[in-house]
Image (cartoon, rainbow, N blue to C red; front, side):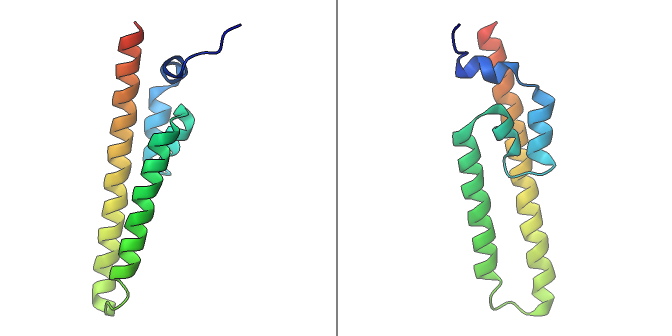
Length: 100
């Protein structure tokens, strides 16, 4: 019995699940489903850097700017979720085409 290759494991995953997991909880959960560890750790590093940057920039912010800072932070995380979901779907499509 042979072990399936990385591409075979990825191609057997459901694309909609990977995309949905990268959007709903965000932060690369779809990459865990696809067993794509490098993409997951890159996404985790970017999200962590976004949180740290937001915390550093919000240290001396007044109350009026705090709501705007939270909105910018949320938009950034939504953009990250959108990018990772799109990338997960496109990578799955590419792998399936290469195996066909």
